[in-house]
Length: 87
Image 1 (cartoon, helix red, strand yellow):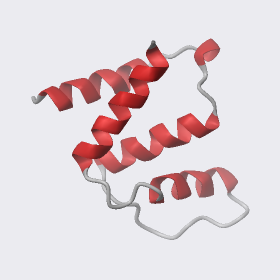
Image 2 (cartoon, one colour; image 1 turned 120 degrees about the vertical axis):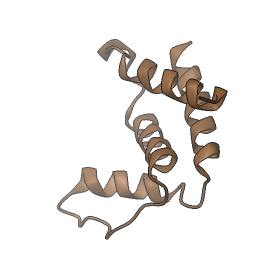
Image 3 (cartoon, rainbow, N blue to C red; image 1 turned 30 degrees about the horizontal axis):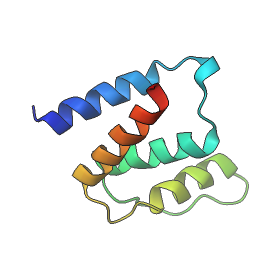
């Protein structure tokens, strides 16, 4: 496994282990979600959820905002953002 893969896997585990008292807020969580999805799946696919699903819509919009980013770029950005949260 490459260093980036190892760093990414470690960052995902560290973010998952954050306690409720370390909640980074919705904007940061959406950014983490988008970077994770971009890193592991690629560009967003499917229709944007309607106004009756605001959470799904926010997630879709966040993911779409990183569309075109390579998997490696998304992993690096996720690792960097996670490092800021864990400090």
